[in-house]
Length: 158
Image 1: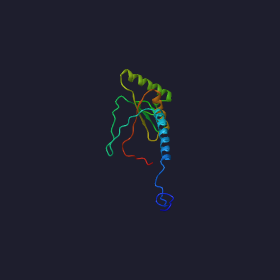
Image 2: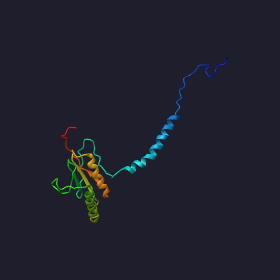
Image 3: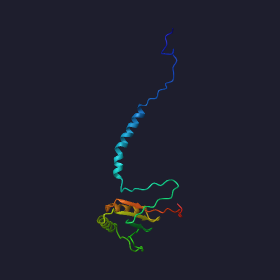
Image 4: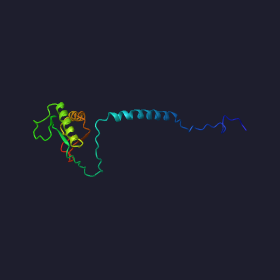
């Protein structure tokens, strides 16, 4: 018997163990970050919009909004008054839009109906204007908002 440096008589085997401690540390840090930020992200959400999920390949569903207030935004960014057929009959300021929406909310409460707003923005309208209208709806205290879209094939090129 000879004196060896270890089991196996001096042969060195490659180390096959992986040190998982650093990986566990990183995962715990990520878990803590997600646990802390998840409630903050939930609070940042604006209005809650419940969108239906269609089956792949199925035609899109139509949501019936009988008593909804439709706000049309034309390509120039004007918010047309509900029921109007001319561009000239638009809200001159967001403050007047908010006032009108608050009246609509009060009328809906008297009729014991939930106020619903549908925003129909033209394809050429600036996204900024659509967001301003959405914020006006939120400022009026209306939480049920829907965006009207075209379900037909697009004729405009990107």
